[in-house]
Amino acid sequence: RRGRAAKPPRNPLARFAPSVWSVLSGWDLGLLVLSGVLYALQQASQIAGPLLLRLILQELEGDPQRCEESPSGWCFASPNKERQYLLAGLFLAAPVLASVALQNSSTILQYLGTKYRGAMMGAIYGKCLKLSNSSLQAESLGKVVTLMSADSEQILQFMAMPHSIWCAPIMIITIFYLLYDVVGPSMFVGLGISILLVPLTGSVAKRLTLARKSIVKHTDERVKMCNEMLAGVKVMKFY
Image 1 (cartoon, rainbow, N blue to C red):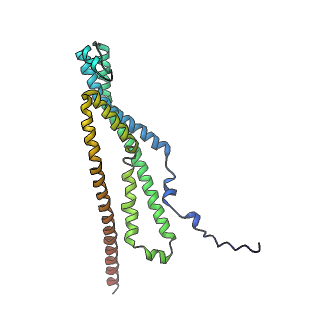
Image 2 (cartoon, rainbow, N blue to C red):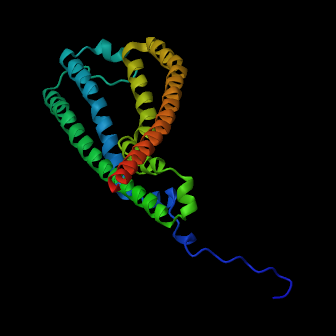
Image 3 (cartoon, rainbow, N blue to C red):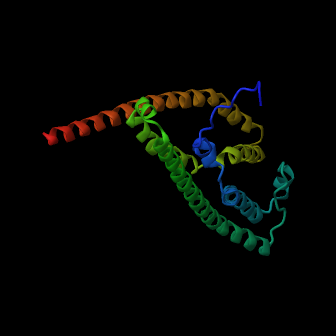
């Protein structure tokens, strides 16, 4: 129509431009949830071991007064043979269940991490093929190699522990509650020390992040220098 500016031509490659989110949008949620359930089962089995051992000792002692003093009420006032066998069987089954759950969860996460790392490397390679000569000259070869090797490897390393993000707070609260049940108010001393160590841990993590960024820059320069040396050797061989 008249009076309306013409639209600029659309880039035919724009809809094929790879991005990080397009790669990660294909997450297998079913496998991820399954690995999370197995990881939670492994953590619960680890906590169940000391709890079952405590119940077994209380079952053998059969002290009613100690049961009345227990804040949680997890105690047996009178011994029972069938209950003793049940607790012993659960105590033996807990580490086996934890080992099986951890192995299967780690296998699933390693599979997903390898899959996403390969997808990320493919996206980087596809983007490099679509760049113009001027864009390729603006980026060093060392940086591209680092993106496809070291940076893509970070996805595989992250997939080894994604469930710790939501499971760690639950485990911390549970463990401190169990400590309170055993030692009483003295637990708050350990809780206070843990809180005081948070700024120190954050400072160390920040320094490690800065050190890694500097290492990545030196890695790019090293790869670039090695490629230039190899290119120079090839030129010398021609003569």
